[in-house]
Image 1 (cartoon, each protein chain N blue to C red):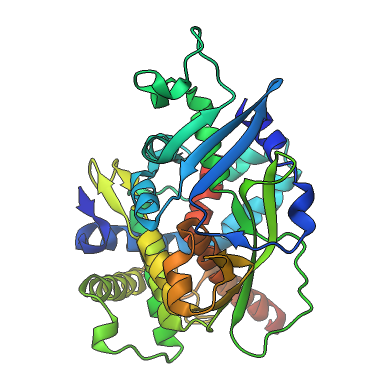
Image 2: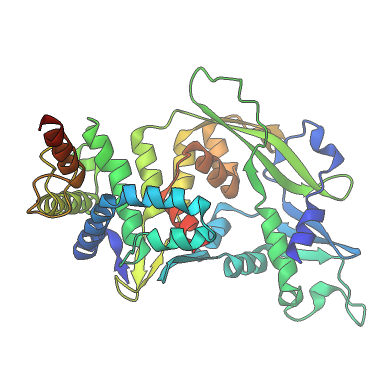
Length: 267
Length: 139
């Protein structure tokens, strides 16, 4: 169901080819998607760093030892539902039996179908490395990461896609890499060292800090109607999910965790 | 709840397992080649996968220690005291102890230097075969 919803929502807006800047400080985050014959709009308030921090700290990443390998559980649903409840302001496309506004219903947020809530949060987080980036351009110094992202609604009612959002970083040192890897591999075990479940806490605070320390400039983003200029402004205004995506690309590595995931998939 | 990075005993057991696993790396490589041609590649791969006894978090942390700290140290990178946390120092200590124990149990082959299966062995099977073949040629 969610896949069907997503594939429709990810239709590019015609405006995506333009050079409009992604408005980080837009007072509302709007998600639009179609399901069946209907289209839905979910309007959130601006989602700040503290909101994302709560989200990432509620994500559960666990590994269990099982016969023949590991099983992995990555549960983002609870975190997504919490974020939805925290930041949603209104919805469009839903009806009530007596015709009153959805938002006037008692506990209206919980009445939105959960798969729609999850889809909406998933679309809030749609950001990833630019596909088919031009790799022929070499930097004289530093590292540039290019991202593509969905953000708010385009003129044609589909979500607007921004391509080639550039994050230029100072070259990371071995110490930066160590901090990144340390954050990604920190683990706790519940239920005993042998049969217990490994719990991986969120690395997000470290990723955000690394971003703020290393970023030099960005292109494609705006705040207060103008491109971001200073590092302080970038650190303050940049969306946390974009920070995490950019830093993740800055430290490409075949992490042991990825190896474990491969094992768990094979098992 | 156990913080993996401070559990010396658990880390030591996991490190010994990892070192022991390394003895069978060549066999696993061979099995992977065989698996491609077998009727049930997944079953073959499953059978040769290392049998890990501890929770995965121990191996994650040790891999981090090896990749991000021990290997750079071996390559000549220097860390100041302030750069390394107490649990990273503990991790290095654990790796050093486990490696020493592994080397005691699996001393290097007198011929090629590869770790031997038993502490009483002097040379590996390959070197013994090579020596026997050389003797036959001489005679």
